[in-house]
Length: 299
Image 1 (cartoon, rainbow, N blue to C red):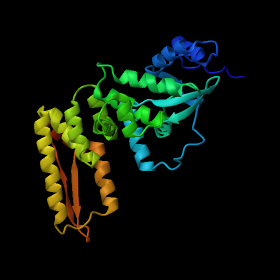
Image 2: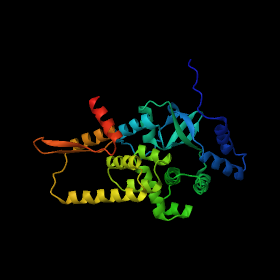
Image 3: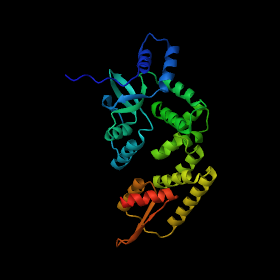
């Protein structure tokens, strides 16, 4: 008989869960324990996790899932999932099933997770709101906290804004940061770029364009104002191109263009006519990017 896998929980987290679940723990103490638990991230054995049977989303786009798999292999999982403890060494997903699936495909054996108990809804909401008021959170941490309130406490942006004493637009601006590619989220978390840079980048619709201007900001040490100006000019140029009678790119060519851009980490443009004739343009913003491109092509 095989030895039972050891649960990937520290003694402190296990004690918190026990105290929150206990009917003998006073309500005031439970609130303090939930507040502490809401800030803690545990590493949970990925085989001890099961999907939520009531998850409304059942279809996951394979290409997007594989992009996330590659990102997790390179950067790790940036945004922890949220789990509810449903038994001894057994957890159910509250939010993050796509991240869990991608982590399994990426070969992870454990996954970072926030833990919830069955009846801590109200206390969790209060704890998260209090956490957001802290002054030492970076922009990505604030965005993750807002998204947790939206996902786990079923709050709309308007309701959330009232809870945290912010304008609705502020909440929206922060949560939009989570739409940025993982590389850019990592850069924001590590303070390679500021909130102002991130807001300018998220205004771009294409992740490849976002990655291109992100690298340009880093390589040229662009200020927020300069980055905003560049991106604004780019978007105006796109509008001008859209108004001309330019043939639409074939979906398969678009996939190839995006895949190459992601693989090389630079912006690539492919133009091709109906007979198959065309050109491929590689954009680079520094000698380092140029040398990396040459090496990749030669390899």
